[in-house]
Image (cartoon, rainbow, N blue to C red; front, side, top):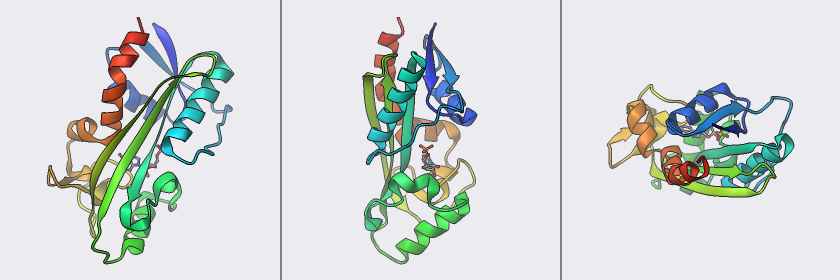
Length: 191
Ligand code: IMP
């Protein structure tokens, strides 16, 4: 089994990646917390590349990183790269998006997830992006998931992310799509 460092100190994220990468010949490990990488990129992909590359190089191991967020069209792509920092709590972040959007008729938004895989020398072996388009509801609906899930409505399923089963969200979400693209290549590299 090859070791793959997940460029996060968040055990929840490690578990989530494990679920996507089930059955692959990689053993996933968290990066050490003292190894901090500043997210100075201007796009999700730049940040994922930065994290994967720097962690891989510092530890001399394969590393994987993701970066994700919500982009609302009428807010010029906000909260975007600042999705995690748009308020102090999930509720605060949701309230801020709804306040800024007001009664704007354009409710279009999308979740984006970028993933990068770096070789032990820090060079990038794979990069990919998944996008899930949807609409921003005026009132939160549903109690599953996390973050902006209760206001993110997917018209083709007539549900918000927070109303979906975890399995459905895993399949159709930005993260699910990004991992689906990555998986065959990751399989090739693990043999
Ligand atoms: P990061 O990729 O861990 O930096 O997460 C960025 C932020 O985007 C999270 O803290 C959430 O606020 C938001 N986000 C990313 N993916 C999702 C999702 O699937 N549902 C709801 N919010 C999300």
